[in-house]
Image (tube, rainbow, N blue to C red; front, side, top):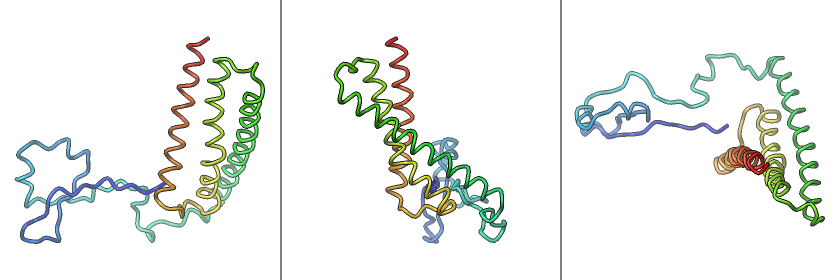
Length: 173
């Protein structure tokens, strides 16, 4: 969702401080020890930027105005609302039942509760922001870099928690 720039400034030209040598991280792996000093007068013919939107705005048609994009917004919106309702309500009921009844507390149910908490956080925290990004604002993030990184972090952590909880349940069985 957020644009990420992977360029890295290695050194500045001594004669012209406004020019810099930019390298991507992939190009750094191809450098040898003495290559940095020999690159002083070398300039790259390309801009090694891997952001999401490298195309100039006027070179392509606005795809957000097409019928296909509108249909995709509807499908994504319905799917995200379904996920928020089913995962939010279902996981909350399971967590509440496990907290209320002590007879349900065994190792398997506690691992499933770990999975339910992870899915509940995604349904309540991540899905509304994704709904705003994909459906409401049409691929425009307006909530700042910290919240963007936090939502992506929570989504990734939830994926790993879910995978590891399912693995632990399989090993326990």
